[in-house]
Image (cartoon, rainbow, N blue to C red; front, side):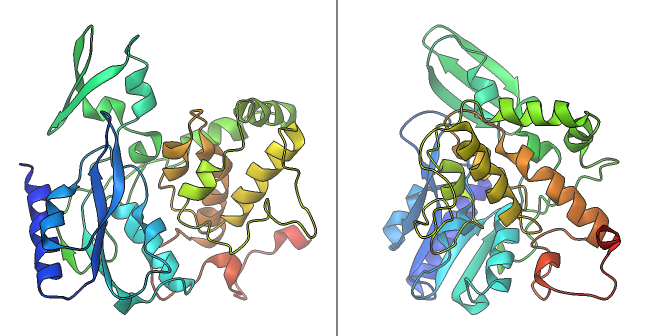
Length: 315
């Protein structure tokens, strides 16, 4: 058994047995290959269902808020950053959550792996940096590093920023010369080119709201797309309504997004939803020196005022 999984199970069992927490939120193996799903474990016997591997792409911070009693949560770097954001935004109290931090070497891009096969994937195994993926007709051995998600390739916070205990050794953080090559590529386009790029990006959107539901910072009591008085956006597949949903949701995430990739992970149409928020993350860093979820004592830049804030846009 992977030592990280073994450590997670040992820690979870101990916390539940001592009554320090009422439940442990983590990942369980899914019903199909390359799939894991969130799980809430409330008994010592249930901890054997807990797993952790490179398919645990959803952000468990999404399940931490509005819980009653004290909980424990298995949290990789981006999960921890969102837990920090939840605490800062009063969605969660720090003493309410016990954080089992998991240093992360990245999550795999399931769409990229699936594209290698013409038939359905029937098996997936991970051994260190090697992936073994099989279908009914063939088996492929892949290097994990070559099939990581885009956000993981650009991640500079692989280790948990806030935790009570670690389930593994800290990993080496990346130092990138340019953390936003994807944004630079879009910025280099002319105005019409950028508009056409985003029109193509949303052309297959079916308005299922999976990206919103998976996002750990989309927790408004009533989302603007569900508001009826006044109605901000139509319910159908009108292209203007589809684009309005994506652009407005992105701006609601400005200065708060940790680029965890949960939106992309959840999208059934394979849309790179991150393209809507990456520019805002770059602006937050360049204008305010801000990255979301790194400091429990500071509020996001668009949530606070400082005399040193840039004001060129006013002039």
